[in-house]
Amino acid sequence: MAISVKTLWDEGAETLQLSIIAGEQYLDRKLPETTMNRPGLALTGFFQYFANQRLQIFGLAEFTYLKSLPQKEKLNRMKDLFDQQIPGIVITRNRKPTEEMLELAEQHKVPVFRTPMVTMNFINECTVILEKLTAPQKRIQGTCMELMGIGVLLRGDPGIGKSETALSLIERGYSLVSDDVTEIRRTTRGKLVCWANEVTRYHMEIRGLGIIHVPSLFGVAAIRRQTELDLVIDLKHPTGDEDRTGVQPATVEFMGVEVTCITLPVRSGRDMANIVEVAALNQKLKELGHDAAKELDDKIISRLTRGRVKHG
Amino acid sequence: MADDTYVKDMKVMNEYGIHARPAALLVKAAGKYDCDIFMEKDGNKVSCKSIMGLMTIEGFPGSVMKVTTSGVDAQEAMDEIEELFVNKFGED
Image (cartoon, rainbow over the protein chains, first blue to last red):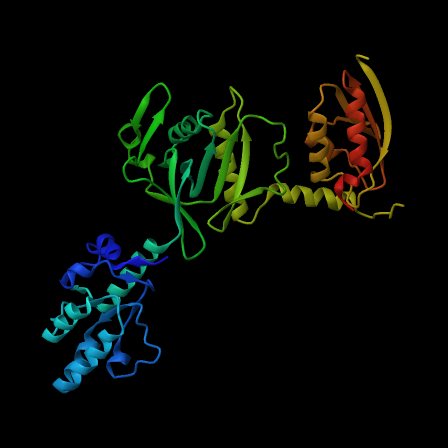
């Protein structure tokens, strides 16, 4: 997913301590490859394989090298660099850009930024931000909780009791991530991360009560900014078709990542929070390599087939 | 029609016998009916609606189960249970 330089500026200016020193009106430029390049080799005049679609980082090395060149050469190399249609330049360690650099930037409509950060730190931070900005992401219906390190997404028709279940879980000491609307993102490691929409974060709607603010009522331990998603629980009216063994649990897919999905029938009087808690514990156990249902099944099969006589 | 009782012997024909998956199929099928459904072997009788019961009955491959259904929909229940046995619970 391509973003514009402006997106990076809007989202990362503060963390990356960026200030803009040229080409402010050209922030709309696309950043086709959401990563960075140090143009050292290009400055020597070698433009084969030049990563011109990336943000160009000018650090100590680039500046020191440029300084070592005669004036005319320096200008030519810079011109060549700008001719490559680069999306933007970041100067680290608060180095002063040369006059010709700023002029060329305006001519070629390239934004130039400056940061006091050390190049290495800047690249690390910027990579994290770019990754976040470009990760596939969507908004889904469901309440997200974190139980003992297990991220659980509760789904189900409106009024089935997602928020009430979440409330009971909060009372048991677990943490709310988001109520009813959950933002979900796929990380580069192929994991899913859930968090709440900025505006409604840590608020819940409980039928008959209205909107409550969870940390005000239950303290900051009752909330969590984000969690990795390990388990999806669908709350449904009973159909009689529920899984009875859990040997082969169903999965659900978000942006290409499969997550275990359990369907829990809701009946009046059934303590859903208790069952969700056990489901999370069981998931944790599975992640530790202990699958109770599978192990029992294996045990039964080995008993049933021990000393078998082939039947006809 | 009401409260009929049917009894039938059925042979376990799949490779692994009545383990978790066949047990789950039986329980799901049995759960759809109002009648009582029992499965009996070597003097042990368990409800066909109990997964833990079915997993303890030791339904070895080749063994024979005595299935009893009694109640309003006993005939239909028996047919469905038999079909599962005949189809080897969808296994080889």
